[in-house]
Image (tube, rainbow, N blue to C red; front, side, top):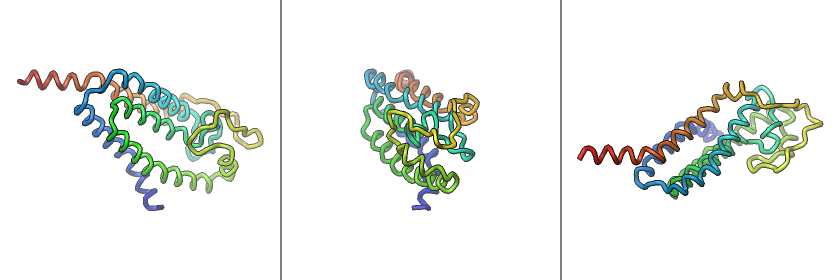
Length: 195
């Protein structure tokens, strides 16, 4: 499993690009339904918000972040990504895209999360107590109490958000929505214009 964890960490971004290619192929194959695109926003927007919110808290490898969204789930960035992926699958009403995304997330993120948690256990002695209070993925409704821990107050930092380049997720989502709305009609007009 350890070797797959290393592979999973390396291929998760390139697999995202592969999923985007499949997504664009499905978009070419079938026209999106406006209602499905609209409903997809109910998953994509909260996913983007959660990723952005989490990026403004996390200080990777420097301290154990337990405040903000990390007081509800240990993996808010991955949860946000899953919400976004589910939203884009919904936008296309495509079972192949949904199955690829679900299988890909399971194959990639389960070992990645396991590997990251091993690192956190070895690096931060308080991680075990944090795990007892905060679920791995499905969030608690109320924030975990860390009053006895050395967690600091923690607050959102826009500079951390920028340092982690989380705006790229918003740019990517905007480009996918633009493709849903304009790519298929534009390509169709070009093909008909060539005739």
